Image (cartoon, rainbow, N blue to C red; front, top):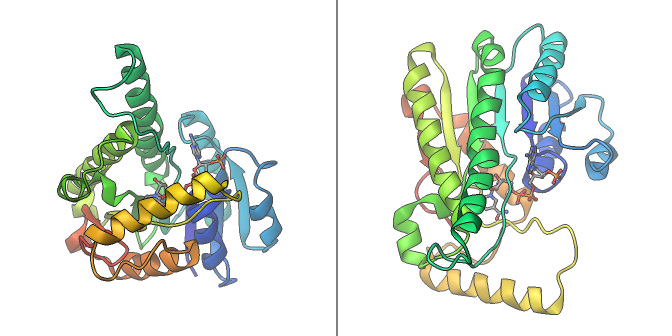
Length: 263
Ligand SMILES: NC(=O)c1ccc[n+]([C@@H]2O[C@H](COP(=O)([O-])OP(=O)(O)OC[C@H]3O[C@@H](n4cnc5c(N)ncnc54)[C@H](OP(=O)(O)O)[C@@H]3O)[C@@H](O)[C@H]2O)c1
């Protein structure tokens, strides 16, 4: 039996982590969402071992309230923290093309505030519970787009705030790992691959753009890439890597394959 806190659990990859992990009724799953009323798919899972808690990851007080509830339920312990929540826009604006300096600042600061700082605060808030547990795994969902070498290969010049904030997050994970390795913590940044998490039907134009995007990736990516993964496939692969990751490898940044093959 293990306990898990998953952020951004209302939809997409976070929801799928909850769905797969809650199949084992001996697991205790704490699903953090921004709004319980908006988390319909999560509520519909209707499993006894899922506790849905509200916390925006930029709200440290809300995170502390959630951590207290988890602590009361688990006797002060936590096995796995899965930092999944993030904002992600698909803006094509490149660093040299923002209309104003303020617009550039706003984009980068907002992504950094949520994706980097929000995740750091979440980790700090749940650290005492992880420390009291035996597994001590703090997992952060990153993106292959935050690997500069891969970025050079793809020539991706947009999504600047998102990818810069995730690259900073990878370094935050490495810093946590360096600080806490002696205590037996396992920190890991893991990219889920390209995952189709759309919750609404795409317009014809959006479908055409997504298809063109994946076809472009297929040309430059590894021979394994045959299109986007489903959330089910991605989470299954990530869990295999998460379970086998050891303290000796703490602080790494890997893909759903457990290496640097991002697609
Ligand atoms: N999908 C991909 O292909 C892909 C590729 C690389 C990396 N990733 C990473 O994988 C993770 C999940 O991606 P996804 O595609 O499942 O994303 P998604 O469908 O956009 O879901 C993101 C989740 O994060 C939550 N969230 C956003 N801001 C938050 C905040 N301030 N506080 C708390 N929760 C917040 C959202 O809450 P609401 O439901 O309330 O909006 C939502 O539940 C992200 O870290 C993303 O960067 C995804």
